[in-house]
Length: 116
Image 1 (cartoon, rainbow, N blue to C red):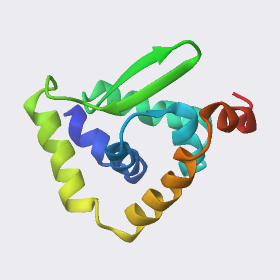
Image 2 (image 1 turned 135 degrees about the vertical axis):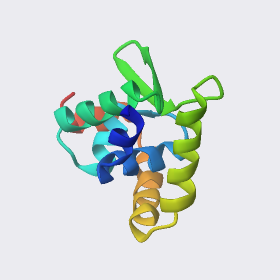
Image 3 (image 1 turned 30 degrees about the vertical axis):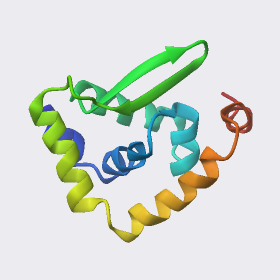
């Protein structure tokens, strides 16, 4: 099943946990985890195909958010399980702290640094 494959990777779980804070653009996700843009793109693609996240494009920006109420029940339940079971780890707390710094920075500035 696509959902179990998607949440079997620790990096994808970290992305799901980061999206608890709300919608993030690709450059913010890349900046948060320090992954190569191609790696982030692959992880986001797998999460999207599993129905765990949704995307929207605005001009040159692509934003991702957790799947909403219209998502299949299995996807909503998997997201809930990830948050409940893994959302209080030390790594999740460090990611949340770093995400606050990223959210305080203009996405255009983050993208400029990454040469998007």
